[in-house]
Each structure stands twice: as C-alpha cells, then as structure tokens.
Length: 312
Image (cartoon, rainbow, N blue to C red; front, side, top):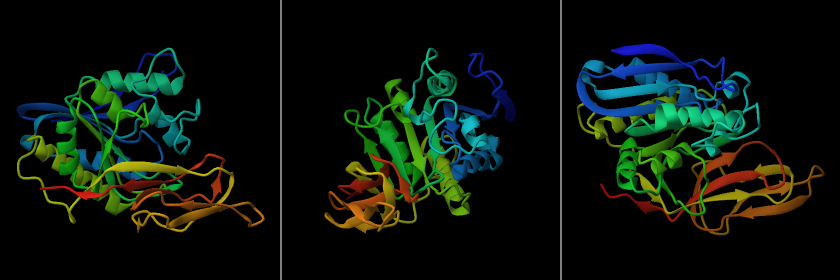
C-alpha cells in the first residue's frame, strides 16, 4: 500500500509548509528507509527520481517501509534558489541535524532530522548538479561507526564513483553525516546538473534506489551490476579561486586530469588573467561550476583523487 500524506511542522518558522510525503508499506517486515530529494530545490532530477521510484514500486514485493519526500526545501524550489534557502541564505545541507532556536534553514533541518532521518534504519538522499553546476555521477557516505553498512549501500547503488567523506576536515552539517552520527547508515547520491530535468539522470538515480532496496533485501532479486566498474575516491578536493571575476573552465565534469593540468582560469572583465587553476593531483572532475561569474573564494570544482578500483 502507498499512502499520500502531507508533512507539516508546528514550528513558527515552518508553518504553512506542506511537504508531499509518500508512505509505502510492504507485506513483509523489514527496514524503514527514508528517501528524500530536493534538499536543494533546483536539483530537479533528484526530485523526479523520488517520485519515479514510488510510482514504479510494487508493494507486494516490498519488505519493510519507505517514507519518501520528493522536495525537502520547498521555498528553494518555489523561488528557484540554487544552493541556499531564500529565507536566510544558508545551504540546507550544511545545517543538519539542525536546531529550533536558529533561523529557517536550521529549524527545517531539525524538523526533517527528527521526522525522517533519526527514526529511519537507512537514509538515501538524492541530489544532482544545481542551476550552475555540472557533475559526474557519484555517491558519498560518511566515515562513522556504521560506515561498513553505508559503504555497502553506496557500492550497491551503482554510480561510477564512491566517495568516503572523512569526519575530520570535511564539510559538516550534511544529511549523511548527521544520520551517521545518529547511527543511521546513509548515502548521498548525485546525478544530473545545470538545473535540467535529465531523463538519463532520473533513470540512473531511480535504478540506484532499486539496487539499494535489493541490497537491503527490501526488494527481491540481485543487485544489478553498473554499466562500468565503480572506483573509490581517496580524497575529494574542492578548489576555489582567490579573485572574483570571469571563470573559464578548461575541463568538463567527468574528465580525468593529471597533476598540474590546467583546469581553468579566472580573468577580470578586461580579459586579463588573474589566476590559473591547476590540478593538485591526478584525478577526475566530479563537479564543476558552470557560471562564468565567480566571487572571491568562489567554489570552482571538485576533484576526486586517489582513484582505486572497487573489488566485487
């Protein structure tokens, strides 16, 4: 059975928000999985993939239950706001587990954490490149006490690259890290980009969720092998510019580069070169800012380095 509900919260900053929520219950006991999309409201392929998984789900085959919310950041979606929540300018995926005595994004993160993340046995969070971001599909999990389970889920998902995010020196406040701290195995899966609804990305994410469900024995059958063998990312290096100006990328998402290779240049609006961005190591471009306009200390791209094959 699949029930359609509306998820609402009592917090003053969140009143009036009505999140579409699917509750799918299987005919056999099993894990409770929370499936979310739209943490960033312009990552449309992730939103469509959540809906597709539920539309194509046969609950007579399902063990356990799935709570699915296609769009977590409703105001970002409605106002076409990439990366950040319009109300306070915060990136929602840097605010988890959240707090009720903060701003809008903090309160929303806390409400989602308490409702969908903390009570779950497993979390799958779907993402994709935002309005000015292209990317190569990858899946991320957090170093933690439950990382063996999370890594197994990440590999089973079937995307080309698997990133283990270290606890020290990495981004804080992500869904996967907050879930891991609560003892919930979690992954963030990324496909799509540039604010486009891409059928290939939607299909890839939906297939990955089904693989995750098979891996968890929530659906019958074996995990389907990926089109190409996945590789593990040893380090995920985010490169920023020193100057504001005009960003000219010399690479595309998915390109493999050698140490020292030119990744792009930042120029002023006269066309003078301000800085050359070079690869600090051999690696693959996992995401890339597609906007030519960049600010000082602006994020340009993410390079996956230390690539190693993943054993079957």
